[in-house]
Length: 80
Image 1 (tube, helix red, strand yellow):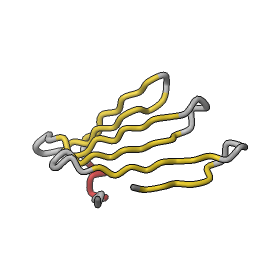
Image 2 (cartoon, one colour):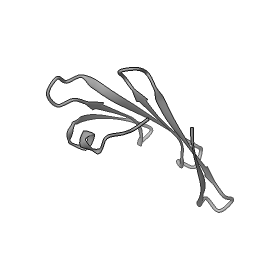
Image 3 (cartoon, helix red, strand yellow):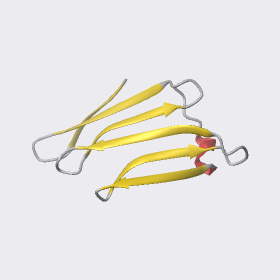
């Protein structure tokens, strides 16, 4: 799924849970149509473990999974 950088200028709505960013909704500035939803999940150490981007027009998703080593350092990112 392609994510066009022009979306950085569109309206964004942020949701937080337990002090962590849990969702970002990206809307078209002109039509106020929801374009993308980004859902974020974290582990018990508050490290990002999953980012799921859903394109609203066709429900296509891009998932990124983040893994950490024993010291808590980011070790891998897998995109599916």
